[in-house]
Length: 362
Picture (cartoon, one colour):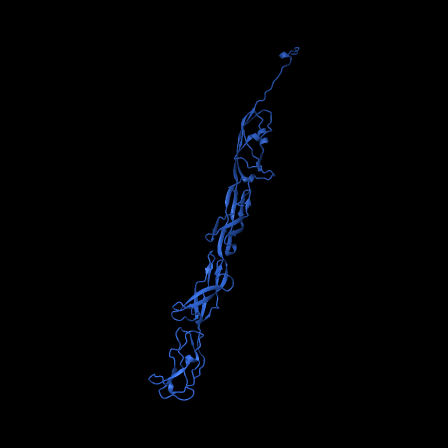
């Protein structure tokens, strides 16, 4: 009887010759062995046939003496089983950089390859289409294993491969700091903002080759300062791939220098001036829509004595077309003008051609 048995695949031929004499006896020194000494199994799943397993009787010198025996033979199941091998991919994690994270390593967690054999491992996603992760998120991958012998022959069927264990490829968000632009201008009556600008002052952490546009929300007209906030942004590689920190800029309006030059003016004693527009020269010109008002009427008309002097204004202001006061938006320097009061011409006519008479009265 050939005893049942199995061997784990090793790439070598297994010879099964574990015979038991269950009836009758052998002559001293005789033993049972395979009738076909080369019979054996190599690959997993193969089963030794009865013909290949048939025994012969050999004497101590190794001669086949089976003709001297009436041999009845039976056998148990004899086979080669697949070699166990567990393969697990090695996952990875990185911060988003615009490039795919792929699985390119694996480890054998149990079992082994036969000496001289090598594995070709492909990585496939558990769900989805690609075994790679480019954008923020994760994908699970498993290994598909093919085993080759030293001659390059596919011997995968000889391995019981467990590749159910998966690895995770994970991409995490990248830190990005978007800083808004800043600007300082002198007051000019205009509204100042970055509404027409879509570029940040800086984008620290942005992946090379990607771009970002921003929308600004700050604006100012009067002297002062406001935050130039970023209200929205769009990143070419996708907003979701970044942890974005927004840093506001500032828009600052400083007072404008305004020189008011008063023109020289002349008037005749006893007269008043009621047209003053031509007496002012502004350096630079007032912003469009701005009006300058002052106490110039009182100033020039307060001079009543004949002679020359200087005059100035002490009460003045600037307003827009809606009457809003913008005086504090200017640093105003008034340059005094010269005023000349000339004598008034008086004509005296004497009655009677200049001859007068009266009766003597002492």
